[in-house]
Image (cartoon, rainbow, N blue to C red; front, side, top):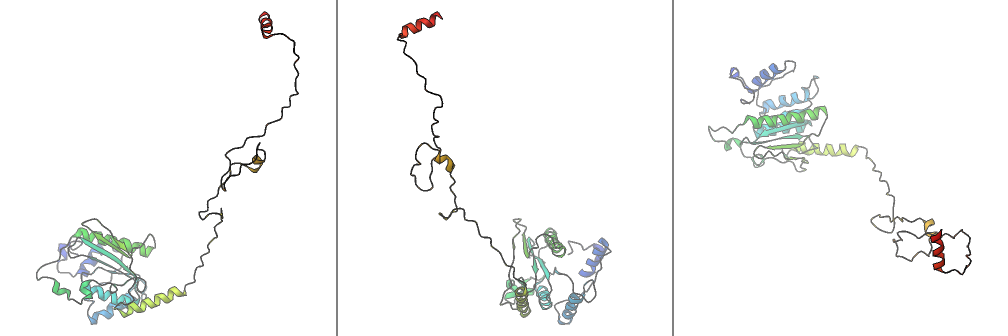
Length: 292
């Protein structure tokens, strides 16, 4: 966050206070509600859940969407627990320790996998992530990677809230290869979170209650019943032409016909002419023609 919007004059402010100041300067018409506390503690968790379920624009109404931009797995699991219990849709996001990859994930309790359905190894093995960090060593941080992941997250939020385009359930970003893997994960029936399993059952009942759409399949017109490929052999010769042919139609195998027909000979309408024999030879006739 210090590389994205922290400014020198904000030194000493908490993350949420600095974020509010920067965002309010960008758009003063937006309403901000700032709470600076650790959501993983028991005393703050209930208040955190109360603001999710009653912190909408209309007082007493739940928020439309929860965005997770936290930097540790314990906080992610806390958000996951709260949203599973409330049935609240949320989007999780994060950047890797080496700062060259990241991801976003849409989580709809009961419909898609929650963060506990397929947890990272650190969470699944119950490893204290604090023991993985070396004393005095800060994780890598690239504002470019964070800016790309933040942009993808906000784009997904707009599509979800304004109902346009395709909303990604999971979209990753690998900066080393410019690779954007995408997938959708179904919830795990054996998820460790009991509220996730409860939400899964509720979702199944909701789907079962929906009216089933009857799919009417139109029967395909059979073009040719004699073969399985539906191929029709069409003759180029009409029945009338075959009848008018001079000879009988040849006996050919099924599916084969003659390419053309020979029309019947027309009877000569000119009457026979009889030529009388004059008895003159060919030489005489030629001599007469020369004299003409």
